[in-house]
Image (cartoon, rainbow, N blue to C red; front, side):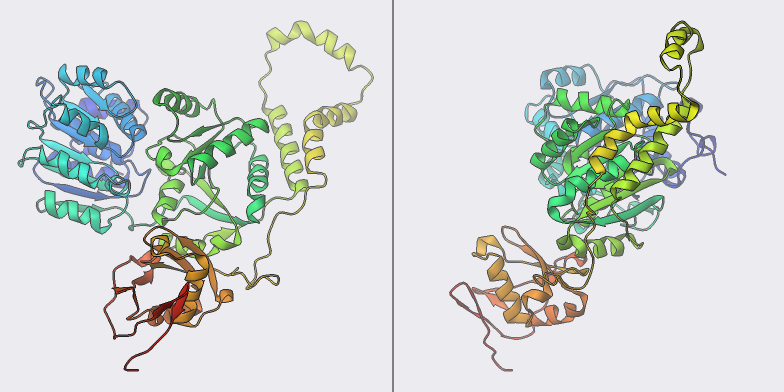
Length: 560
């Protein structure tokens, strides 16, 4: 088994890593560090979140930087301030027993004048978010012409967040003669474009399969009515009393609402989202890292870069629009080889996305039942008994109070004492769950009442949406006209501005693809493709154009 002292690192770095408790390098560290230590080639590393990428680039970077030179030699770009601060902290910890470096974090939401002052004092390594770095460049407060190494961490996330133009601008200010190290969990075409434009013959390393999730994560979903999602969340939390978890919501409003409801209901929870000030975000993260919080409710953007050990559960209040977001969410648990659980709380309209997750992860997402009231009560009672068994008794300090306690409990048998003691906590859950309904929704092919799609289906991308004057009724009519599918065959429709998504049963996949071949809408081709296979346009198979009519589509065939 390889150890850090076999990878070619300086002894001081090895000592620091061992002091931090790391004994065996992860696969990406083991394979990347010897290559990067040579410092003579661009590098691309593909690995999932939580596999140790920071040490994979951070340790060789520290070994290559000249400590006696005060010019900026390395630039690390990260998509969020949380990740940037985490990287900075890790780099500082790595060089504890090595050399003294001035590592400066540059990010939005904090005093820019203070950051400028730190940079001007001489920063060998700058860790930055793209937006704030652009501000410093525009103010001519930072010089990048001495950069020898550029690290793009979570490159796919930076591009997903719209930083492509910022990255292009930043990289244009760096010297042509430099080494660029790119780390990413996925390899979309936008990341490939970065490689093509800014890297020369990079060494490419893939650890594990692209888009495949951490094998130590158990993936589950529960199926409930949309209105019952919060009740289902509470039951999952109550059924797991030792949970240390992250709850993901799609919007800032939902995140704040769920967190406030949990706090009102007595849970040790708080929220993390973009409306918070940097000071508020820092305070929440410090509490969460120190386990002063048991549950953190967050948006996808706010939670990127969270690197907290021993998170037991990740709970999704909805399935994200992009499957890569699901992988990144779930990757917050089961870090450093540990195990974790990911649970999606979904309604019937989201079943199709479960299938997409399974295809992306190449592993099953198992349905689990929302616990019924009796199960929650039993779990809480056993948890209380476990705490009694494991509690540490402070003999010296409690001794003086025991005579009064014994006198108060005099006359109670052992059995009566146990029952009464257990009931103090148990009665609260018993009262709440006594008449609690079963929240689980029956999963079947069709709903008898409305014909809505219950089965898992295929999700499609289509390049028309609200900007084209379409509403859900219009989209249903379009799909029916082109593909011959009725409302009962079509699942969730998600209308966006210039594009949309819709779901159909897997048995209708070919019918949809063929049905939209050659279709035009007001003079432009309609593109339809499987959402998990990209949205590249298909070739024109013939001049078949539908005529618009009063809110719908009228099919007319030519040369058929």
